[in-house]
Length: 138
Image 1 (cartoon, one colour):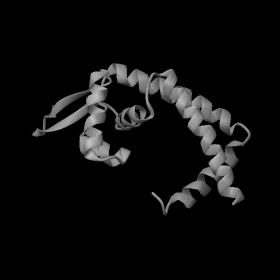
Image 2 (tube, rainbow, N blue to C red):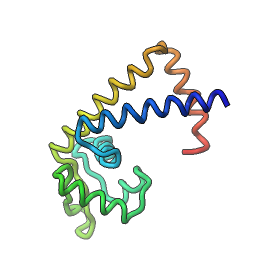
Image 3 (cartoon, rainbow, N blue to C red):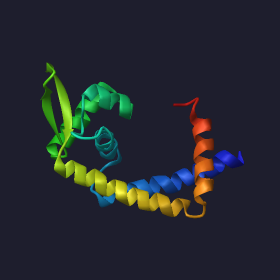
Image 4 (cartoon, helix red, strand yellow):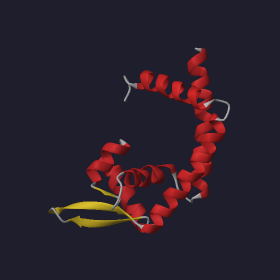
């Protein structure tokens, strides 16, 4: 119990750091998830809605709604897939990239503060142990 109780307690601190980082960038957590998936895709920062579904683990209806709302905020754009005229690609706009990059910078700084009590070697060891523990759940 002591291990998972500590993980749960740390999770609360991380959730608070994430909320703070997202609020500073005027993003909701779900917006960050979609924008971060596009950012991870690399230039030209675009994915199909299906690929976004797979990365964010939401239903297709939910993803459609999220894309619509992100388009309204001019954080993403929809484009016709040049390889499939019936397909759509969701592309991160410059405004969306700035917002997600700002949120990531803020979040990384907060995460560094949360982990400052651990040496680099301890952080690597903890990361390895948590990866091992989570393999059955990914």
